[in-house]
Amino acid sequence: MRSVQVRRGAYVDSVTLMQVSRRVGALDGVASALVAMATDLNLELAAGMGFDVPDTSPNELLVAVEATSEDAVKDALAEVEVSATDRRPVKTL
Image 1 (cartoon, rainbow, N blue to C red):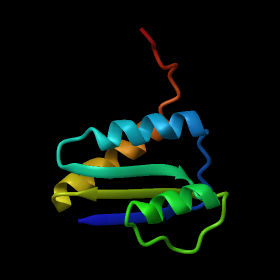
Image 2: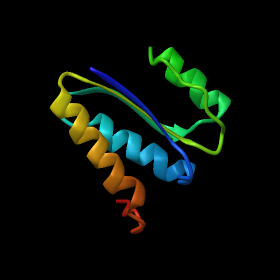
Image 3: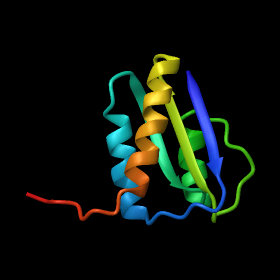
């Protein structure tokens, strides 16, 4: 199952989005995930991952998920909501 969403009016910095993509991609049942601003480079990356990319602008958030089930897609999208809005500092070891 694949899901591609464009979220207008949602800006998140690129470091946070890379971390969100990593968290979402690590969820059970998720085969691939890209959570990024819809820049030309990120749209090319999404297309290279096999996603059908809608018309967007660089000021929009692209959320692309491929998972093994509808429930896994729902879990992934829920993680995007939580992780993209979590502004706590990231701890490094």
